Image 1 (cartoon, one colour):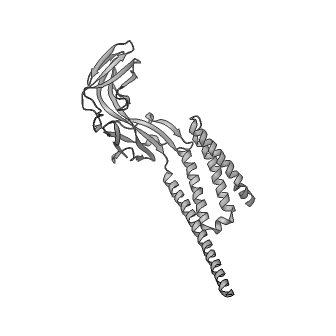
Image 2 (cartoon, helix red, strand yellow):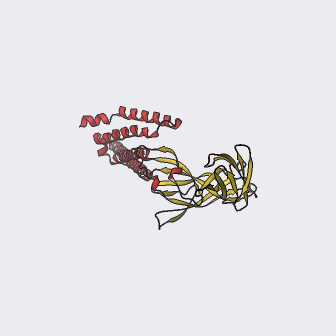
Image 3 (cartoon, helix red, strand yellow):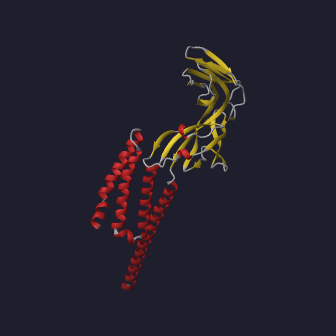
Length: 337
């Protein structure tokens, strides 16, 4: 048993695992084709290597500070490895007045062992306000949402620094936000269908509020959103929110025909009518799932505390020994005198 522990505690194994971890991290940071979850393999090897070193090395048991430091380090490596395996990263655009739909989430990374309960997240998007200084310098973002179980909804205002945690998932606003056109598709002889068309981020693309859209009938349209009054105020402080001014939509069909329609107006398209209902805000969220991160902080503090205890135990003993030698030398001089 001890021979196996010594092999697992080998410093050579430590160096190999750290080298493999470094290579995988470098490859993962430069390539989207490599799943970062593979880094959990060398992290698992390092955890076993460190655990074996703690069990096999008697020095750790004789020095409390050193033992606490290595236990904290072991917990930290284990937590990081588990976080890599269960992590989730993604982003989503949510329409003001609408409910979050997990099907709209664009996933950027997901761990091999992610529990996958994003479909249990429920929240409704409320008002969105973004403050700007003169020169379009963005300040604070205030996004109001309602989340929680039915009948016990909680209202929370979040922003760039204040996130909402729902079912372990953390939602935090991003700089991306803009306007969305609420539409109602009225097919011939069928029930109307409601939807929204998101325009490019505002005010980043205030000069190009244009998007391409394919109607339910399959007809390709290019739509441009215009406001009767300027929405942004580059010369002074202002707040971006749901516009109150009149607006119009310039719609160009695939055959080059341009149609202009305002709020309440309708476009006659192939197979039905497309009616303009209103304009709302949309805001983008970054979503992540790292529930073990607080424990990583605890493990790091434990390791730092153990290291501090180790040096406290070690250096006073040396200083004491030094003082004793000086005292002995002084006594010898007195005796010779």
